[in-house]
Image (cartoon, rainbow over all chains, first blue to last red; front, top):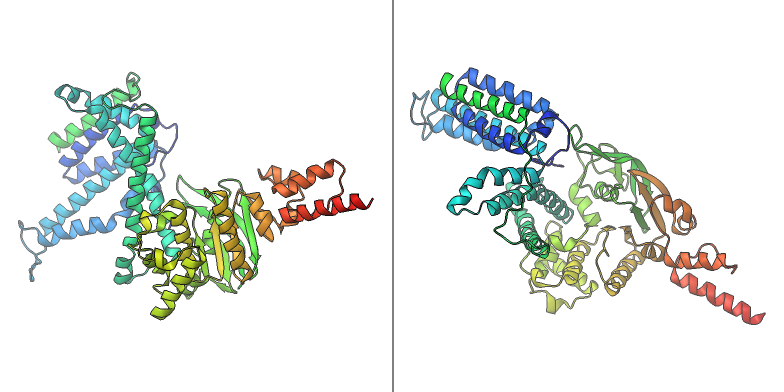
Length: 262
Length: 286
């Protein structure tokens, strides 16, 4: 019944915690590109080994690392089945009504699902080893060139970081309201579809109201402390260290291997 | 209807980086009609304890028995639990969602086997109990009302189900003094009519005035379980739990230190006044 917070920073002193946030972000981007090009068993092997290595070095246990993945298993199932049952190319194994399952479709479905799983775990590793403030600073630093063509980079970075920071808060609040409505007789756990449908409104409306109230309060609090748009305010970044360059090098190398060699 | 906890422990997010033990082998029993105060430092497990009592959490180990029946066994009817145990969360005004006050208060009645007239009657009763004029308020949107009014409506929503055990998590936090007194008078009246009350509160005056018995939790363990008069006598011990006694008890103690003879068990303003009157009259006779 109690859900784990996902994407929450877990304080620690691991190798990954100590890496510079910019280096981690760039490495993540490199790995995402690598993932897009991954298609062979060997490719997935490399990604799996690397992910396992990262989880280990971040000091995460498996349950925490897989927390976000476990929650969307039904979604993955739908993606897989959509591909497996409705893919147009390839030879159909049999066909009935609108269904025409094919091996090619199943392979594509499995590919998409695997990539999403790796993506979620990698993202989770970044978020649980990097404080949100550092993510913002890194984003602002990396997006800085866009500022020259008139894009409000600092605002963008702030928006992203605020959105990320509010995920755990909103999840906690959802849990509280869910419990409060359960105590009043809402049936969230009931297997009956009717009960489930009826319990959506008592959950969604209070959360919307509170999200808007929070946004309002945050805006007021920021203005009260002298926030004015258009200025750079993210924390200054310290210079990159040797291990930061090493991390970027390794991930870029993996990216290149996935694109050209496999 | 007694509620009993047998060596109940609860651990949050067991087996992950966020694992925290919230309750450690807590045993207690609350008889029908009692008025129990639950206190403790922030994060001591009070909220977890009441959520276990209301069946919103399952204990990691141990049993919660309502009227002798284990509420976490598979065959137990949850509807029965929801009907008998009412839980008012902290800041309950956040849980309102319906288009009219009347419908919001009736939300908890939806699944109860009552006729439409009975349901309407209960909504009227609950709203009037919480100090509203039923005809005036019934068609208003709960979202347009003030914070204090919204809280009273949330309370009406819990009262409408007529729970035999009413659990309140910090119900008077951020209410003004008048609102606080009105609210506690309402709870006290429900208690006199037979409802069991379990109240979490940091306000020692409220506990001294209304509670019969006080439970003190510290780091997930039940440290004190005794009548309020007994608990408030040991000021030093309470201090080690970061807790204070009620103002009347405090004043009586100061006067005792000045050499005035006062009984030890003063915890309410009423008792303090009686004590002072007796002193004054005694002085006159001399």
